[in-house]
Amino acid sequence: MKNVMPVPFIILIACILMTGCVGQIKNPTVNVSNVTPTITFIPFSNVTNITNITNTTNTTVTTGLKGPVRISIGSWDADLPVSIDNTSAGIVTHDKPLDLILEEGNHTIKVCAGTMCLEEVVTIKFAKQQIVDFEERLIRDVVFPYPTARIVGYYPSGDQYTVTVEYINPSPKDISMSAEIKVSYTYIESRSNNRVGSVAQRIVTSNVKSGNRLIQTVDLNLASGYSYVYSVPEITGITTR
Image (tube, rainbow, N blue to C red):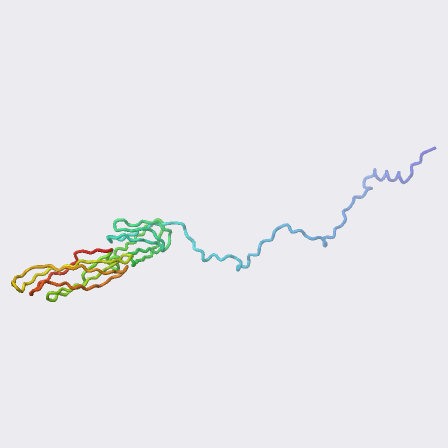
């Protein structure tokens, strides 16, 4: 009995062996209109609105550079405190100027004698020394570096001599000041009619507030006689406490 191969099977084998009988499988068509795109970058922040940008136009810019300055009071015989831009900076004396290094720009330098302060604005530049000398202004405006007294007027009349004394206190505190006033004179005694010499003197005291001046008038009594010849009165001693 013969084996009979089914015809469809034979046809199938032949198709496999023959090139091009089996078609390539095509990918299914995708409807791109329904696909949501994926964002692959981070968008930039919107900086076009300048109102959101920090305003830095009022910022003080410093160079960081510095320059030297020397502060002097010349021959003014005192120890005076110095401040730079209202900050204490040291002491200046007549034999030792104060040398400082300041940042570039304008600075206010202040020197105080008692209650009176002198100021000057100086412009500091890199590597260029500035010199500020207060001597002339101290002599003109402060006049005296320490508490003192002076005779500002006198008037002789017979056996009396009137002297006007000015007390000056440039120190930073109230003080009591005493001045010894002396006047020399000659006169003729009434009994002997001889010319003799004598001295009248007196100590006067006043309380003087800081930074102030005070005027006091004192009378000196002379020996009895006539034909007086007076010298110029003088202050022979001043004490403070």
